[in-house]
Length: 109
Image (cartoon, rainbow, N blue to C red; front, side, top):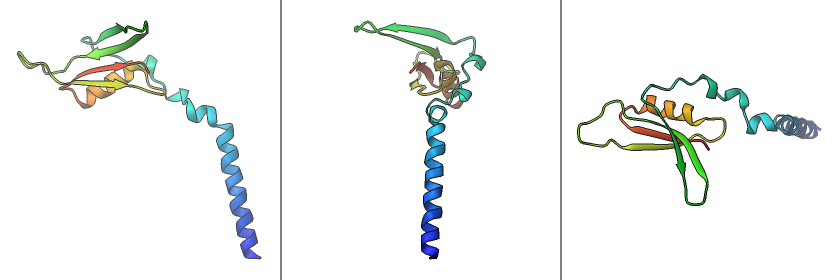
């Protein structure tokens, strides 16, 4: 008898989790509360990018040059795509803060 009760409790928990995920699916996929696009302050050295590609599409993004420029040498380039709930501004600043010796370019996803 206790096995039947255990199975019923497990099934009830499963149904509760699935039901809560169903009602929260929009927030789980698109967590708009995490977007910080309006709160990002880019450094003065940041450049806005607008790159056209042969198919007619455009890539829009941001470039932040490396903090320490080596004379006569180009530093490595770190390319990022923010993905869901990240703007190019936030992604570029995030990567630049963690790896300041790299040129960082990020495009909107």
